Structure formats: structure tokens, C-alpha cells
Length: 413
Ligand SMILES: Cc1ncc(COP(=O)(O)O)c(C=O)c1O
Image (cartoon, rainbow, N blue to C red; front, side, top):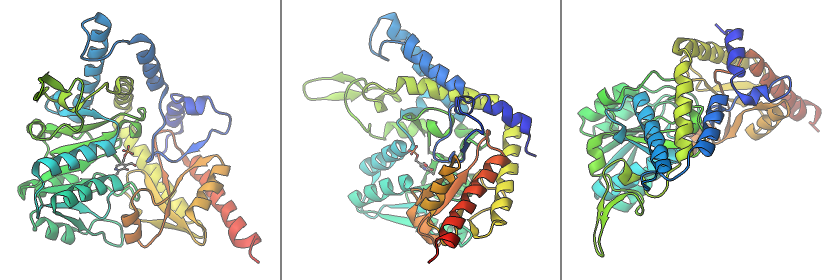
């Protein structure tokens, strides 16, 4: 059920809506980045004004306060992920950087000629290119499990590739194109039983997912981005099981990641600091923790029900619209809907939507191989959050109708 009162209360929490005119903009690009609630903006402003001094450096009390706040943010992310200890959470810039750290580090420490990494044809480029580069450097091979016409990963192909005993198995929690939710717990169990390291790209869908409870999971590495979780851009995380932090090489060398340095040798600090050379994004980490607080404060069942109802409403409304074709839509999709409008390039559709004050994404969605496997060059994508309702979908439909009127009727020679 779509609860208008609940949505109105959510909108009141986001300056994007309260500071805009009427009707409010229809922000349907949440898979790219979510809006930031006022509590996050306030936490960011406070971090800027109230905290000074760098982390882990000085002995003066300002630096100590900043260090405590920064480490408290790490502990908050660790708690939210169900990690065994805060040291397993490394702050990065974003999910892309986290994946690069794992792939590059694995390649340096463990990559050998003939090594194999299994990914899926559903991957965002960020969970494909770093692996391909690491494998190229060590002389290994990338195994790719293909997708079925409905957009789901082909289970036979995936299991056949797993039988080739890859050293690493990486996959997305949710497709950023179709919103398909993958059976990641089942895949992780199978991959771990096959002796592989399991890497979960949780950049997409984590915001909708029940707690991951990582300590008891079969994952080895999990990545995510703060800006897809109501947080600010420029802060993300890499969760790694403690044992892996002993062999994963630090991605950057320099200040703060080192315990002792002599003229010719150096000894690294303990994790997590070993992995955070230089001054980290202190403000971003605090904003991220505030975003997780906000997220925790929203009733999970209500969020899930709202998302399901709105996604199904959007699927039904768009499927009934002349010229619109849904791509990979499923009832359990994680609030993402890919579609095309016959005879009109997705960029043009997005532009007509924008003219109606509706934000959607269009193009290759950083997942070109997947989109091509689905038989397209590019797609439109609408994605939903707690502040969206039916009126947003209706306005998207107005944009689509105007695009069709412009391109297909009036302007035909
Ligand atoms: C599935 C998936 N993986 C990785 C990323 C990369 O995230 P970021 O741009 O925050 O690094 C995205 C972003 O859209 C994504 O959807």
C-alpha cells in the first residue's frame, strides 16, 4: 500500500523538497545517488564547524575529539553491517575505489598465471574492469556467467564456471540496471564451499536489503557507497574479514599508514589504519554515520512495503503505456525499473522527462555488456525511494507522452 501520509513525512525531512516550489520535483534517479535528509546536512555542517584537528596525529584535544568522532563513525558502519569488529571497515571514496583495492591487492598478493576470477554478465563496470586489469597483469582469466533473456544470471552457466575453481567469485547484490535481486547468500555459500574468496558488490540495493550480518556470512569482502545510502558523496567502505587484512597490500603508502620508518625499511600500522594513508574524508565519514542513523530510524517493514507497492505501480503503469517496453522487470525488483520507448533514444526520453522536472537516468548505465546481452544499446532507468509516490510516475508518463508526440507524430516528414 502506498501511504500518502508516510511519504509526506519523509518529504518533510529532505531539503530537496521543502526548499523547492510546487509541485515538488520528481526525483527518480535514486540508483545513481539518493537525496540527503536534513539530519545529514546538519551533521555535515556540524562536523565542519565543531571539529578541527586531524585524526590520529596530534596530542592536542581537538585532534583527539576528531579522532574519536571519526572512529565512532567507523564503529557505526561496522555495527550496521554486522561486522565482527570496527577494524574490518575501511573507509574509501566509494564502492569503485573499494573494488579496485580488493582486485588490485588480490592480484599483487595472490594473482598467478592461470588464476581465474568469476564474475557475472550483470556487473557494473566497477566490478568488472578492476578484475580484468588484475588478471591481465598476473596472466589469469576472467570467467563470466551469462544472463538469461529475463535478465537473471543463468544458474547453469554460473555453476559450470564455479566448477572451474576460480580463486575469486564476485557478484552484485542487486543489478543497477534491472533491479534484479541476486541470490547472494546461496552463491556465497557455494563459492566458499568451492574454496573461492567471495566479493559482494553491495553498492546497489544495500539500502533496501535486510541487515547483512557479515560476521556470520560467507562473504570475504563487501563494498558500498555512502551516497547511495542517504549519505554524502566521497565516502564509501570496504568491509574485509580480519584475516584478509593481513595479506591485502595497502593501496597507498605515506603518512599515518606506517608504524616505523627507517632509512631503508618500513613497518605498516595495524588495520584499518594501514589502509588509510593520508588525511581521510573525516567530514564524509561523519555524514555517512548520520545517514545510517536516519536509515535505521525508518521502519523497515514500512519502507519495504512502500518500495514494493510503488515499484509494482510503476511497472503496471509503464507497461500499459503505448510504445513503452520494460526490460528485466520482476515483481521483487529492488526499486529499479529499466525501460525503452520505441523509436526514441533514451537520452531524448530523459530530456523530455527533465522538462517535466522529472529526473531519470538514461544511457549505458555503466553496465554496457549487460545491456547489450539484453539486446539494447542503451536504456532509460527510473529508481525509487521513500519520498517517491504515484504522482512522480504519472509525471514521468507525461514526459514520455510529450517525447512521443514530438518525435513520432508531429515531426514526421
Ligand atoms: C552495482 C554497482 N556497483 C558499483 C557502483 C559504483 O558505485 P560508486 O560510483 O559509488 O563508486 C555502482 C554505482 O552505480 C553500482 O550500481
